[in-house]
Image 1 (cartoon, rainbow, N blue to C red):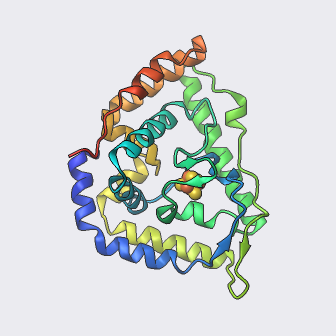
Image 2: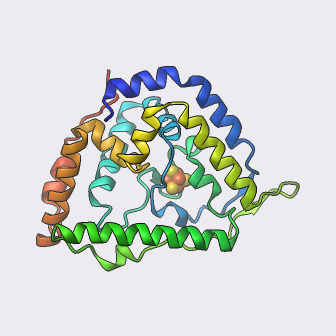
Length: 245
Ligand code: SF4
């Protein structure tokens, strides 16, 4: 499990890997996007190395901006089983961490329709499994959330001289995974315990891993039963800034 101290040490010791990550992203073609932000309905999965880049980006923000963002991320973590609220980094039509956005955001719209369909089906299966897990604890998640998936994007334009295909995208994705694997056991902890979910990592840094899961279960149960978000709003108002010195 991650403590704030673990994250600080990882940040201090991963600068050469961060540089490799930037160079690997640079191999993706330049694109033009209409910023309809439909792809920003969900926070994408990512590797630990990418999560660290986002944490660094948040640490570099003014504390007042970061506070609001931490509130959005914690709200997203607690409520995502029952509401599609959009990625917490989305601000209007803009991304607050655009230069550090993970591979999932960069590759959306570049996959072929066939590959995207395959990934969407896998994601649907993951959601069905998650729905069954909640059901075992007596919680029925809303159908509109379980059925939600992001449509294939037809609006991305690749710069004239550039090209990309699924094979190259998979190669880049695997390379990013391999660079992150250099973080050794932490890379696997993030994938297996935190399911590559940045919002879970952030909640764990605020409340502890086990306690964040307990809180999520209580809050989801409470909101489904009462339709009220009073308890959630109270927690969000008082979240600590885990980057404050
Ligand atoms: S990180 Fe940025 S680009 Fe990616 S889904 Fe969130 S708002 Fe969109």
